[in-house]
Image (cartoon, rainbow, N blue to C red; front, side, top):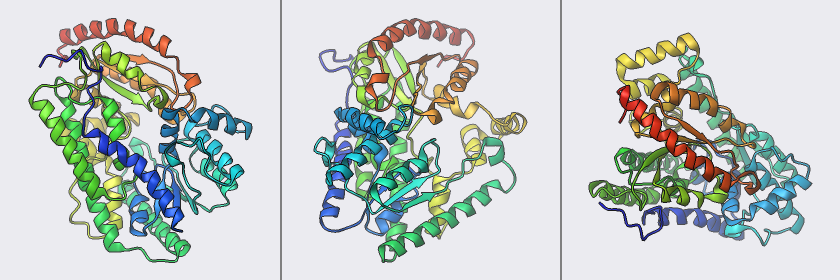
Length: 454
């Protein structure tokens, strides 16, 4: 189908809008809950472990990380970042954390939600739930917030072993037992704090509905492997919130994802791309997005760049766990999947055995990290290193090397930030992007010569 050049460069999905609206609704719900005297919790991104407990206890939760993206997109973040600096927090600290600290300092200072806060703001919580999952700031960030808010802090400790350690005999089952114990203690703490019991029937249904919702979301993104890719990363980022953060009603959110699946499938059937231009280059995005400058991707789409997949924020692989009767164990085995089974699923028994052998010998295999480059037929990788996020930035150089060695796919490195506009140079980034097109063209020929081209 001939692209419609009269329209905006990125061909946005109509089904994206009701999913995006759930973000605003989550903040409205938290404000309504507070006005009715109901408890509100601030939670970190925790790989989905907290949400079923909150839903089963009828507790509203908001996520300062997600709120940081909203503040960045609306332009409100800069003031909160400056306030965090005044409070003594360094400028190289995580932008999400600094935004939350600045917001909280203003909240306490005013005794009410700051008037400049987008989406109505985050109401004062009765509990702060942090986790040991991934980033540097993690629970120390929420401990800092607790100093302002005089609210208790509970840290969900989550294992993060290396690949070799994950494949040690018995390691996975030990980690599952650890997580089950950790979550049961968390549930008991919540019951004590709130003075009510967990509705385990609701908890069980929440997990099942969430797995069904994520399965549809997973299937939506699998459709993006085709040429031309029917869905741009802008729509992925706008639609991910019910899955990656909390959906108070995963069954209803699942229906919205099903609507998105139908729209994307229709595009696949009619060869409609996620950009209203000829798809010249297919890219993966590595890192966290510059939420303050997403319009930059319209400029790239104008040049025929279609972002067909991303490294961060995707749901777990769908697996059948109906045989697990304990809902807490089912939650753990869904969210924390066995690396050996993942390798077998991605590569099959024969090739998978070679990946396992490589991990046992070297301690690590690059094959899993960059396999999506081939699966999604990428011409290049857009790497977004952040001064304020070492956890997502540190592996990027290794990713760049791996993508080139394994698939002859080059990487474009554009420094920036998730929240702070002062750290992103769109003019300089565009100059680099223009030059990078020649690099992608060159390596497309190299892949053809080596029989790697897709």
